[in-house]
Structures are given as structure tokens and as C-alpha cells.
Amino acid sequence: MGWNAGQGPEAGECLAWEAHRGPVFALVVSPYGDLWSGSEGGVIKVWYGEAIEKSLVLQREEKRILALRIF
Image (cartoon, rainbow, N blue to C red; front, side, top):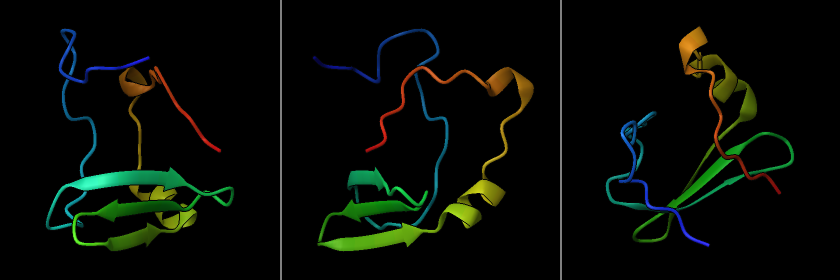
């Protein structure tokens, strides 16, 4: 199964943080709601769930979740 982010009329960047200097190769959400990211060069960063909730505000028309995978 694959997914091409460049397909479809509404494809594009929906959220961006300027936290890594290079490409991010891995993202995971912990059972506690923390977001971990890993980038080129072995850099790992974490954002705690409470901080993410404060920074993510969805407007009414943006509340379309098409896919989500949490372990």
C-alpha cells in the first residue's frame, strides 16, 4: 500500500514546524501524546502532548482527518 502526497487537488503542506535543519525521516506519537521526530544526522526532538495541543488549533473547515495511525 502506498500514498503519494503530491496527488489530488488539495495536496500540500498542512502544518509546519521549523525544528530540524534537514529532512525529517521519522515521526511517532507516544501513548502519552508526545510527538517524537528524527532527522538526518541522528537528531531526535520531542514535543510534549500539552505543548502540541496549545499550538494546534483547527478551524471548523479544517477538521477533516483523512488518515491517522497511532501505536
